[in-house]
Structure formats: structure tokens, C-alpha cells
Image (cartoon, rainbow, N blue to C red; front, top):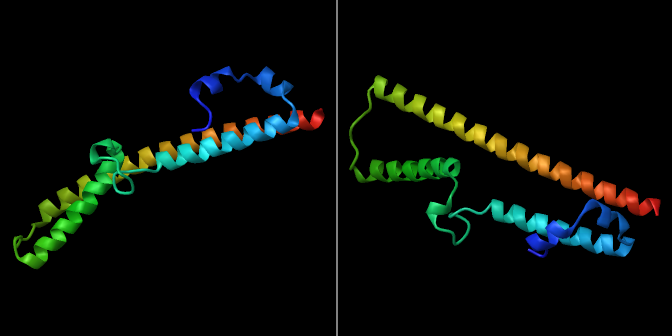
Length: 137
């Protein structure tokens, strides 16, 4: 990141209002770069980075485990290792569990999306205030 936690804690609304336009523009660029970098880090998983699988978020692990399980089942079909058929009750139970898990994943993803939207809105609002204050000067 380009701005440290200490730098961010030192910034106050009053100080921002007193900064010259050129300094505000440079600060806006740094904040934008920090936001992009933070977003990129949020999107990282063990599948697209060097992070270990244990660092994946619990709600993300379920979808990764499902993908792995599907791949493994596909391999078993061709290798002849898994020749038994599920009865209707077992199939219904599995489908119900998968539906519950999918709903939980969707709920968590919705929460994450709403939090990102809120943070985006706050950042955009702050940048608009900065731009308005600069234009007033």
C-alpha cells in the first residue's frame, strides 16, 4: 500500500479541506491505488495466488470443495471405482444439503458485496466532497 495506517490516521477532514488542489489530486491518486490494491487482495484465493488453502474464507472453501468433489467423482466414474447408485432418499438428502450450503454461500456473498458497495459509496462521497471543496477555493 502507498499510505500506511499511520498516514491514514493522521488525515482529518479539516486538514483535507486546507490542502491545496495539487496535493489533493496526488492524495486522491494514492487513495485510488490503495483501494485497487486492497480489492485485488480481497479477490485472492489459494487457487489464484500462492496463499495456502487454509487461508481461504470459510464460505469460499465450500465452493472450492464442491468443485474438487465433482472432479473426483468424475474421475471415479471413468476409473470404475465408484459403481454404486444412490437411492431417491439419499439423493434428496444430498440435494437438500447442497441447497442449504448454496443459500448460505449466497447470503455471505451478498453481505460481502453490500459491504464493498458501502465502502465504494463512502470513498466516492469523500472524493466528491474533496473535489467540491477544491472547486470552492
